[in-house]
Length: 96
Image (cartoon, rainbow, N blue to C red; front, side, top):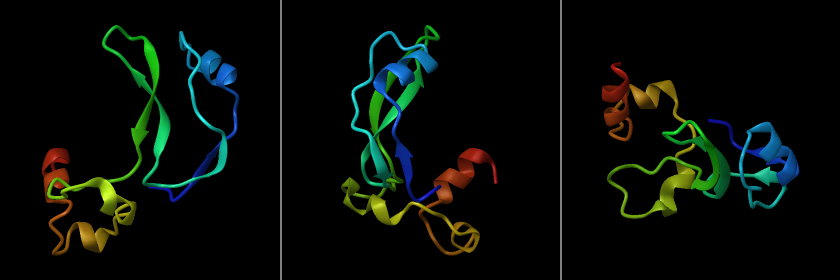
């Protein structure tokens, strides 16, 4: 996962590009970092698209809150296959 990105387009441009029925609500930024809610485009069951704000980060299943998720933005291969329990369930899902 990357560490930061920027979002500087206008709501109208994003709505047109993703064929959204409503203008998305967001604040432009040159420094969007993990552990923030970010603009995300999702496709619904009827194939329409919707702009929503989702939390950016990895929240482990054992975590009691999302406060620690900003520490889990990158996974090193030796951590994934090492002794860490954080990624065991993910590896089982993808079949590794």
